[in-house]
Structure formats: C-alpha cells, structure tokens
Image 1 (tube, one colour):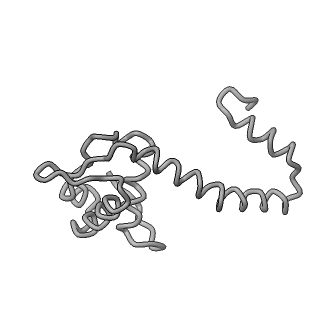
Image 2: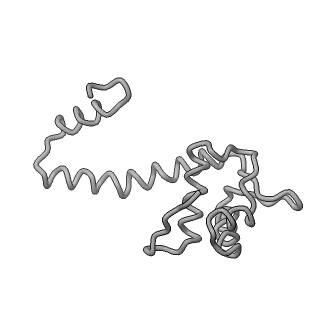
Length: 125
C-alpha cells in the first residue's frame, strides 16, 4: 500500500490525519487495535519514530490508548469526537470559503441548494 506524502506538512501529521480519517470512516473501529508502529513503518517505508510521533499525538488527543504489551487501540468515543471536531472545522473554515466563492461566481442561494440536493443519494443527477 502506497501513500503520496505531501511536502506541505510533516509526514507524522499526514499519518496522524490518515489514522484519524480511518477512525471516522470506521476502518479502525473503536476498541480495536490499530496497526503496530513497526507494521506502519514497514508498509509506508517511513521511520518508526515518525509513526510513533503520529500515534503519540493521537494518544495526546485522547483518540488512541496504549495498552502495555498489546499495542495501540482506538478509544471509545473517538469517532464521535473526531466527527464533532471536523464538523466544527467545516462550519468555521470550509463553509465560509465555499459561500464566498459562490458569491463571487454570482450564484444564488436557491441555485446552490438545488445543486446540493442533486448531490444527495437519490437526488436528481
């Protein structure tokens, strides 16, 4: 499995975000182990210290927990916490940028609403 690492931010942050995304999408279920530091380092061909730093940030954020001799596990409530944080970021950062871009393009609220509704599953595509 390969990942294209961006040069815009450190690899450990990109890995942290990747693990967080997998927690949110259910690939890493709550209460289950995440891949070991050594396994991730080998899979992505990155330094184990980089993986350790990413995992430590997730522990510090109360999303993962260390279990001595067993590895790292997704904490109960991690998915809800991440989803809440992501929604807040969307509302505060991405939505205003979207609205401003639509305004600059001269798009009306009704037009945007119709386009959004058409994107929903079962919408008019």
